[in-house]
Image 1: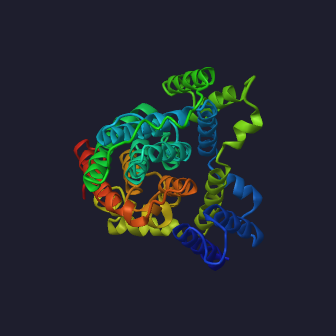
Image 2: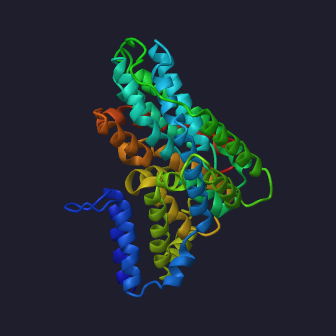
Image 3: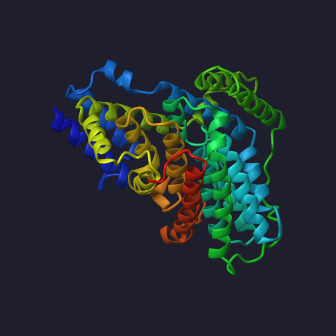
Length: 409
């Protein structure tokens, strides 16, 4: 049985690295789900063990934030932001700064994947209407969404999981990770500006061809809900309960149908999480991860030090992806110290900027842009992604060491 579990585990994470298997149209979610089903089929897991494996508080927080984000989307807020950014100024420098600030700020409170999914098409349309090359702004959109999301415990899926595993406080997390995230936004701006200097061109007109109707009452409802959520984070109420209460309030509406709101939830991501929880739980039942952790501890190679955590986050995030990597590491490493959790959150998130497949946000930007006729290539992204990742991670390492959250070696 152990050999079968190992084979399915290896096939799952090979699929996470490749994105899909050659000749098949099964994506990462499908690969993880099929693996979990096969583990049930061969008797490696029972249905009760599958339920036990799933971290439901993490799933609840993800779901609740997606419903809150759907409220913003239904109000037209994301499209409005994207077009406002595209028309923001006649100076490319200010236009780039607006892209970074809006993407980073929104991603700190509303999951980064949702933000870039909603903003990319309209940003492309607005920039193209002004005869501008959208590529540097798309790179900045993805990079800033990743960097900004590193600031909070609800900024991206891996941070949500880390926060639940470590029972991390929202505001304490912000204090530990907010500064490197903010510096990361500055690095994104500086690197993209330097890499594309002389090639931005000057905006032509103001792109008035596109109009977005902003539903102000629905937007007000979303803003009030967001403020209420932040207030709930200051109480002793479990985070998942607070998020679900806010999501429930969003579903009670006279104008927005529940079916439409739930249609904007990223069910694929929720299924991916649940399936990976099951696959990793099956591996844990073999006892191999515990033996590996014991060996690493004896050899002094646990990732509780920056000299181990940094390269691990960089390689794992750009091979199997930062979400699967974090799920795998936290399953195999029980009881990591608080500082290591902050380090894992910020480093795995910033590492996702290295290459185009490094984070789901990057992939979403590229795919959504291509759907409206803008191609963001691997090399275009890498020319900015590599230096922005190295510089932002270097600062994060110094910050985590200087503030005492993690030892250097």
